[in-house]
Image (tube, rainbow, N blue to C red; front, side, top):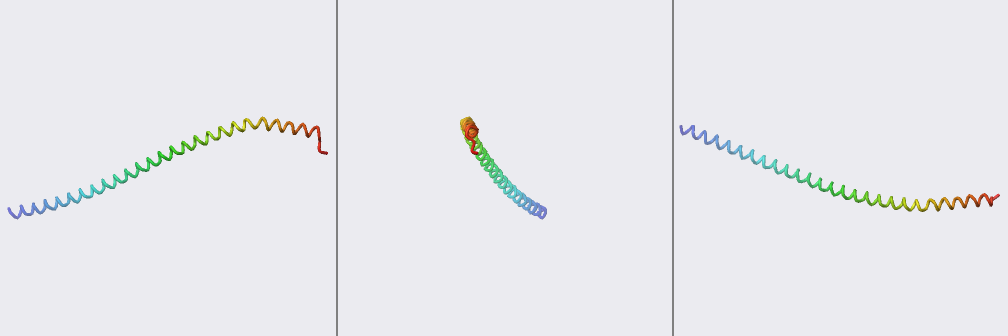
Length: 96
């Protein structure tokens, strides 16, 4: 009976060590997963910041394009008038 109990105690001690080893592995796996989650969250934050910065840059470029289009719309009629005057001058004063 005593031998049987000693064997049971030895077996239970081995089971406890195995359970602690498994627990340690699980704790390590959880820590690794938490690190992975944190990295993903950091990457997500970085992507969001980059998206916001690019959206702001796009808005700035669109404003610049609109401004240049307004300038072009002001210049084109003046250019057409100058070209018209040039064409009339060439017709009135041919260079030959």
